[in-house]
Image (cartoon, rainbow, N blue to C red; front, side, top):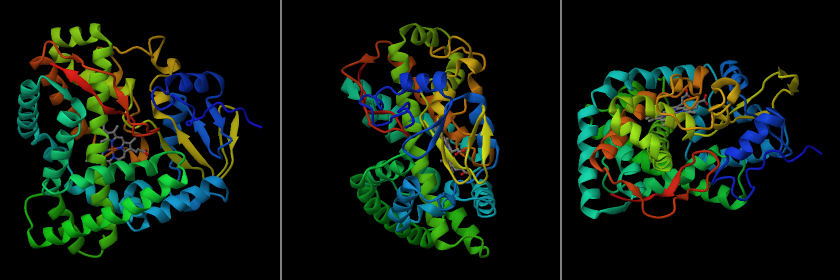
Length: 401
Ligand code: HEM
């Protein structure tokens, strides 16, 4: 029996997974878990794995408990057609979908958003100033990225509060393991979300504008390069990835600063460090803690051979604190860390995140302005975590200003 070195169900794991990641990295950086998957935790091993061009398509898994569960998740989200998003496709579909979305979701469009993001942040900060004491999740970390991605896509924000809850469920498909109750909840969420996106697309067809969704619809109508279901899947992916990740960057970043007052003082003294501080937040407490690959052939790494058609978890958050790569202070927050930008929080290889420019811009503007505006920013209660293994961050972040 393999030792239970990595147990995401262990009490406290989702509150603070870093001791478990350290143990794993130090004991068995390439680990076969009794849960039926393998886990990698070293920086170089993970970077190589993600660049090795492996599969992300669960259908290619060998039979076994992981395949059964992935199939259930797949069936659960089939109504939501999420399995058709580029995140879950191999070439040639992945290449086609990614290049289509990449053509309309460009760094130029993102950079042009800075004045609007600044205005959105300032309006939120005005409200926070007035309240004096808020849950920063509800006051800034969620509404900012949600407003920005809605605006970018051209989806009216009003009336779509439900999307927040559904997104929170859908991202649970990215957890390495799930119980039946969760699978059932995700199934329902997948169907409801697909219906919402389908209606939005129908509305947008009748009201095209200068936005990403109109451009994607035009790309679809341009030929048969994108089916209706594929369009829904890419829009859902952008919509959900656009806020569920960046909200954790903002909230984990603020939490890290408040727990490290010396670093907060340094940021106030040297505001020009804000962009580098965001890289360090991404490294220190990764908003996306893991990604996964499926081996198509036996894969040998660090003296271990992972069999073909096996589910491998790449623990990005563990790699981001690997002392063999980062040095002895890997577990410390240092906003002036020289190589912070080498973190692997956006993944690597063919599926490397499409949104780093947007996430970095929102993170920088939000945190820089929050810290500058409120010299007395501090915790106003316990930080309550969201209990997720993967898209991990606070559920509630009480602060006073
Ligand atoms: C993929 C992280 C923000 C869109 C990914 C992957 C990671 C990631 C780890 C998967 C990489 C892999 O499996 O190799 C993050 C983090 C973010 C963030 C940490 C914020 C702090 C965003 C935003 C958007 C976005 C704002 C878009 C609005 C995507 C898309 C993919 C992706 C479309 C799929 C790429 C593909 O499969 O080719 N992201 N992301 N992400 N991300 Fe992000």
